[in-house]
Amino acid sequence: MRRSTIGGLILAGLVTGKPQGPFPVELDAGGCRIERVTSGRDTSYHQFHGLSPDGRRLVVGWETLGPDHPARGAFLVELQSGAHGELPALNNAASFSPDGAALVSGFQTGSPGLRTEIVEYDLGTHQLKFLAPDPLGDWLPTYSADGGAIVFNSFRTGGSDLYRLDRSSGNLERLTDDPRYEAHAQLSRDGRRIVFHRQVEGADYAVEILDLATRQIRAIANTPAEEAYPAWSPEADRIVFSSDRGRAAGDADLYIADTAGRVRRQLTATPGKDTYADWSPDGRFIYFNSGRGRRQGTDVFRIAMRGDDCRR
View 1: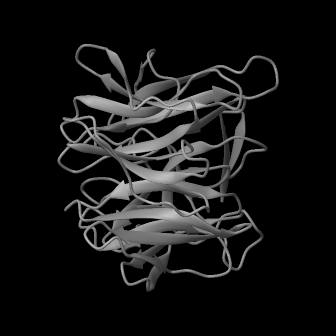
View 2: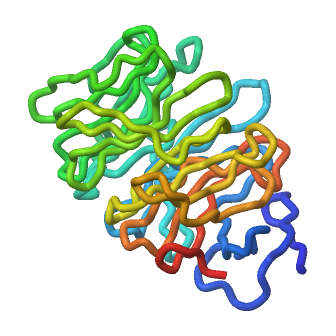
């Protein structure tokens, strides 16, 4: 086992041999080959469905750590070279539109409680547009596969419910009305289902699927532990999610399940909370955030995939 330092962090289990790309390669305790896309000590990095449609770029949000006037921002990573390009209009992670022309993000307004508004940023004109503004917080927006809608969660009715915004008409539709916390919504490729997580009680969360035609909701891969932060596979026949089953509360690993809820694979097993997983469009990688190897904050990683399993 080699040990190396990057950005002030000590990396254990670094894989020997030449990396296949610009990012350092490590071996997860579960055997998966992973790459560290960002690395920091005084800055925390995160992504949320930030891959471009061609899989070549990733939007990363960042914030400085410490109590004195934290700063926030976002940048684009060119995944073939590792080069960064700043996105000065944004101060949070963002999701790409299906045509790659725009980004949608939860914009930090600077008001008490870190309230965010949903904004759309045009990469060509550099214009920032506020969508469905509300005095209460709106979070975690993503596009539909055809680009015609954006789904997000909002506290505008008191609790955190899911909403769908029609981009052409501006109509806003409330999709859920459960008093429990609901978030992290993502539409399936055919636009018929939404996967999201819902708080059951306390630290117990469940991954759920909403059928938009029938409005029926069903939980998948649910245990008394936390199951959260789900994302569809490119074919929408599998879901990657985080769970702390069998571990200390909050020490979540990544799992893959089919849409019936049968767990097919555990991907990670290294201490630290692995969350916000997202498949690349070609299925070759799963990107995620993790605090592994850090005292505070998170970095962005990716797992090299081979079908249902990781590369080892």
